[in-house]
Length: 279
Image (cartoon, rainbow, N blue to C red; front, top):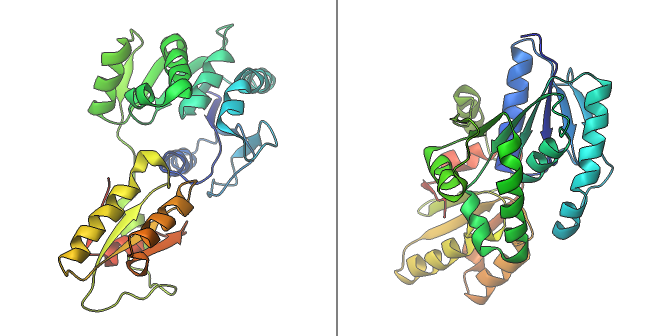
């Protein structure tokens, strides 16, 4: 492959899509391909191979959601300048905002555009004004790409039910290095003690409304009311964290809900738990 490739993502803050982005780009490096790594914002908590050229299109770090949408044309301008300067042939973008930027930066059709869509688009139907804006942008921008990649049949069906895009759409499941995951799952835990005769349930993900961690906390109340020795481990960080802590406190189960925040290796906690839960 002799194409000059760039990968684009909003940032490399905490998140599942960001973790997959790290896996994919490092996988390219293992195969002798060194893509340009472009981030809309200056936030990086992952380990991208240092042989890749990591570029932050802006110095912004924490931006309110509405302002992020207003910045899309500026990001597109910055991306277009970079791609022209470095003769980029293909830009592969991840996450909605980066996908919008990717398409808008290429109105002159100078390069190939591939959009990686994570999540079901129909979620935006119940997210107010911002949701409607996102649906409008997806409808009018995604179809201008050369290819759309989704990570499940459900995402494909959801997208086609809403928009019936004519652009070629492929399903490529998220890559995971099983050997690395198993190796990490065997590591010892220093900062948390698993008590004997207690069943542990672990939840892993960003603490945002979409993840519905509050439902898990309510479920724990029902289990505790049945005199079951069950405790909950919550791994992740996000804007809902304090709200969830307050909920656990209000329900009287804060002694049985353990917020560990963002951890470098979540697999060792999941491996030692009795169950993993995704709400």
